[in-house]
Length: 316
Ligand code: SF4
Image (cartoon, rainbow, N blue to C red; front, side):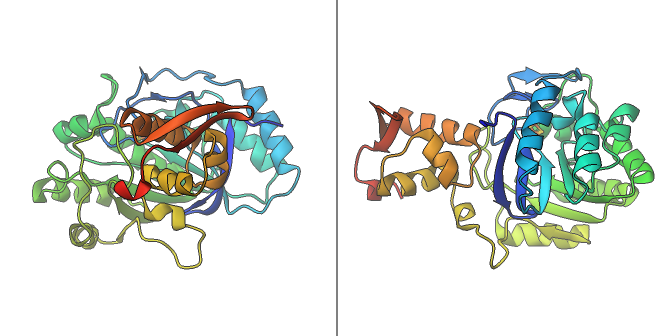
């Protein structure tokens, strides 16, 4: 069966071996973050609806999970904000009722957590990783560029309500953008908000793949450690656990693709099978490399192949 809504499993830095569920089309989100690795949001919305057919998602999950694969997590993530799908609760219930041995994780930007129906639908998830990049309205708007109806205060309120009602783990994620949310003033305000949200863990991350805006730079490691220590209970993410199959994370999507194409020409589908990248990331990076004249494509019987145009040593 060809899967359209589930992907992987991929080795994840934080979650081990994780099967992804993508409930919205690229790129449907309540935010348009400057660092988004899926690129610009094309459908900026707060409307909850069945963006992809629920039946298809459940059928794919059934087909995959019937084989009893070994997974550390099944994770709602992908091409946008998963809680925008009005049927997310049905997917959660389907997995929990039929495959109770699997742990569920939700990656969310927190925008809709202030909605009671959303919180009710996700209460059976084992781990929620919500993000909060700023606690001041101005910086929140600059980094996350949300739908006009979303305000920072509501997002924080939603997180506080989630903590009160939800008994699973909450790992709050903060994405550091140097020059925007790494100042003392911003961090002090964030720390106060974290004190009210009371997550089980705080993780700070920074850019490690190409983002939506080329000018966004990663924060350096010492700054990340300083921020993590200031926020207490926090740890920098982006470090790799020994023993995990994570060599792919050591480099950006483009360089992973170049290293692979150096060995042999591949189709986009081959790259998806070989690399720890989602199809959208592969396509985005292939387009960039083609536009820069670093790779070229050739139509063959099995599909469109990509290969290095010049000596790959020129590029990495
Ligand atoms: S980073 Fe997440 S929340 Fe931000 S635009 Fe991308 S998908 Fe949406």
